[in-house]
Image (cartoon, rainbow, N blue to C red):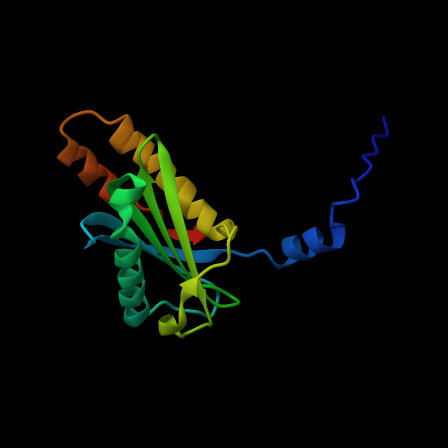
Length: 172
């Protein structure tokens, strides 16, 4: 049986194939949990090939996270967040993802030129995580559900389990 599927006009076949050709793994590493603006923040670094995230970039990202999370109470924050410091192929990114009331989450994305953490600024409206950042956030959604929402025992034990459940290694 010969099955031929006609591609809708919005499909950018050359663009999708170019993305597939250039797709690669990126290195993810957890840096543990820190405190920022009264929140427990699980910190990750994500590195494109040939790029590294240094201590200055992590410190700047934590400052950005603290500024964003300081307004968390007004957005219904539950006090848990994930910070991704991403040395990307085309620049630097910082994502601050926090859990808020009603099983919802809040996401702030900051962008800037490569290697210039002081130049990070809020990303444009509608900007969402890239495929590598989304992989980390997917893991974090599962960790939050498994340990905090569906966990058993005292909250402190659940938070300890959540805080140590980090995705490490190559992310595709």
